[in-house]
Image (cartoon, rainbow, N blue to C red; front, side):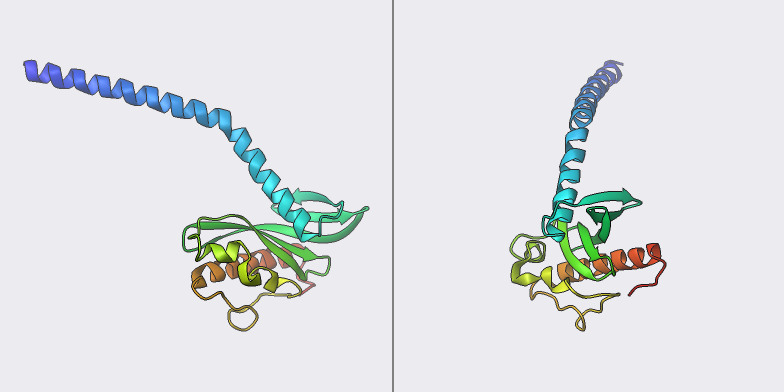
Length: 177
């Protein structure tokens, strides 16, 4: 009988500790969620500004598509895109001019291996600038080459760009390529 009570008491203590820890984690998450969202939005806005050469632009978002205007005239679009790299999800911001031609690609967040896949994300060897000026859905080893040692990451960026291109063309009615 004593064993049963002892086991129950230990179980109740563990339950209490787990409940307190869960409460603390929930509290910290609630307090920091807005800061995390602000940081992500700041990174997105920074990426859009960089793609459009830090001009005094306005970007209005609708369904993940940012319409970019300068002095009231639409000069392009930016789209968020997520693809799977070697280390996990890679979040991109893909920019286009008003004719749906690629202006640039920026990596907002990634989990790629430093010194390998992260070389693509850090734009080493001009990995991201290779996209500028291209249009339509791009093909591996025809339109875009990867970086040696970062093949999976390079393909992930290409997949994200193609996903964004298809979404933009559908948004625009497919009239541009």
